Image (cartoon, rainbow, N blue to C red):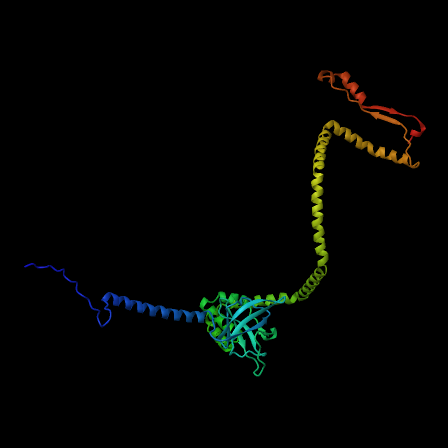
Length: 381
């Protein structure tokens, strides 16, 4: 009986009716991914909220206005715009307006009522020097400003000048601790800016420091003396100061009136400079040759024998000029008569021995004083 061998069949896997199965590692991965997604979503929401708050990015409608200030020092784009201490917008731009003014462009929430009576003031945010723009509503019932309208300079106020204020209190601040200086400075700023501080609170803060200042009256006296001396000096020279300002104004006016002539003069100076440069360039070769020849002449004249001749010529020059003047008095012509003639002859060198001999020396002496005189009447002086 023959038996046939059959191959074993692979088992058939049927899908589970309950869906796919996950092992423990897959479950942990899915759980971590869900947590990471929740963390990223929360981080994005918190970061966006902080960006809106710190970046002054408004989520509602905003309206743009402008304000003219006499001084907008250190106010810059991005600074806060506040009403009663509440941030309602931000400064967009600060630029020069006219010759001595500044115009500040800012945006505020459209719900903030800006009227023709509204005012603007630049205030200190802290002692580091940061500023913010404070708005006041003014008299109620005024007409609302249109978008882009300006608050005039008469309704704005620049920041107080802390430099001049603190310079006057400099000796006092040197006697205090840094913490006391900060407290006193903050109170001064609040009082002067009208930010809730009162004179009573300032005096109360100052009174708390009197115990440490009781034995430092000399420093306080120095503050008063410095301020008094400054004011006395300015008052004593007020006339000169007024004259100086007036003269400076007149001088600037004259310069402004003559600006066309000054401009033309500068242009002519440029042309003259070019011409002079060309002249010097052209004359340089001849000038150089003249200097060379002048050096040669001076070398010749520097010799002792030639110096003696020059001295003798200069001695005779007055007498010669006098004679020339006398001749010219007869008319527009010159009559020359040989009345006297002097000359000096120098023998050539024949060797030291011959030149130093007594005969040659006597002969040379005679030749040094050769003179011929006329006895004619016309030669008489």
